[in-house]
Image (tube, rainbow, N blue to C red; front, side, top):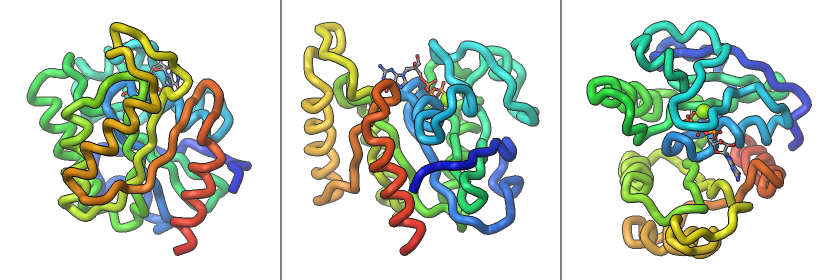
Length: 222
Ligand code: GTP
Ligand code: MG
């Protein structure tokens, strides 16, 4: 299930503009700064295939063809489009914009939501959404809301807990990643009566990388 080839294909701002070759895809989504791009890089073992940013809203970097969202956003730079990366010439990893980015103007945030949700509801080749949750901080309401929206719309999802290498810090609620994960699972169980498949990861230690790739391979072969 290893990645031997990875290639940035295109950025799209509308579902209709996404690649039309019909191969299966997995979307990475999560709160801004949760570590989507880092995870993508870790999965493909490359440093800079997807752009990462130190602070939410730093550099724009070199992903081209992302015109349609406002220049205001482009200049502060984040993952803003639906970015397709073709893996082993047979499936896609898709990097989506982060949600809950407070610095984005309200109208843009709404747009953003709209096109991401349109993608979830209408992208027929989407096999599963990989919802990233930061395990180094206490449970965020917006993450639970996102998960329940996906659940209500019957979009298959896998929970990916990120930053599991981080140690507990007082300012982050004083809990270990394992404890935050458990809290999230308990809360999500209240919504779903069940917990979706979940994997604990770190882009620093590459924890969970093989498990994710194996899980994706299994989902593709269904
Ligand atoms: P946006 O595209 O801006 O929404 O962010 P993103 O979700 O793509 O996050 P990104 O990968 O850019 O990572 C955000 C910050 O978290 C960076 O400073 C990363 O170095 C850091 N980070 C990401 N993953 C991990 C991890 O597993 N462990 C630790 N310790 N830090 C991480
Ligand atoms: Mg990103």
